[in-house]
Image (cartoon, rainbow, N blue to C red; front, side, top):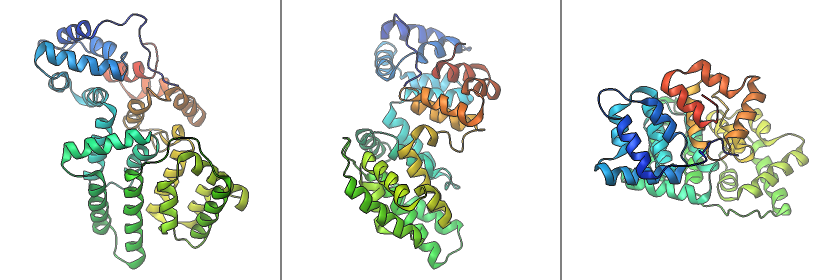
Length: 327
């Protein structure tokens, strides 16, 4: 369930654009007006504001926000105003260009495994348009280059390098069937294939990559259930016991993202509110209420309280607005 609150009576895009223009004039910026308007508009309404603002003032509202805002509020607001495929394409490129990126690869997992097939295809199309290179090509070149540069070379390490790149490329290039179709005999068969690879500590095996990157999410959830029923342990725990470093970590992230996206968006971000802000921006129109509930279960403190403690000013007001809190 989404947390975004829309007003009962929504002004026209022209009226919103006029108020935003006034709030962005002069030396000062009326952050409260900016946050109130844009923090209470859904994706369609924000797109209408962008188009109308451009028509009225012959200027991109994103460029205007970039020139007038600063710091983390500017970063978050620009991400919010970008359409979802563009937001994810830009985020993926930033992750791939970072020097230390292993922990950040979970962002690519989220983009590939926590969104619809149509959204992922749109991300790939936008990525090509923005960077004149396919997302798959950048994943292959950047991940392989990074791992070879920062890790001691050995045959097992080389195998993991190839496995990491193959898995991520497979995830971001997939187009899964989006209907709830499950073959339970197939689920049991694939669970056996996964178990065999995990027992042999061959997490980079073609069967593992193929199963996780081609099967629809409903089929994979059934496969994970069969795994636990047949072998007495959850598949993510079995992978953890195999001790296959980075690849094992990525695989566990894939499984968690498929089984429970709301938990995946919180993993690793319990104390880093700026990273959590990325999850808020991505999920506020999808399942933020579930994420808030899960956050409380994990931390025994509400997400609202965490944002209040760890942020301030317009940035705090913006995040609080998005998660449906009263400010």
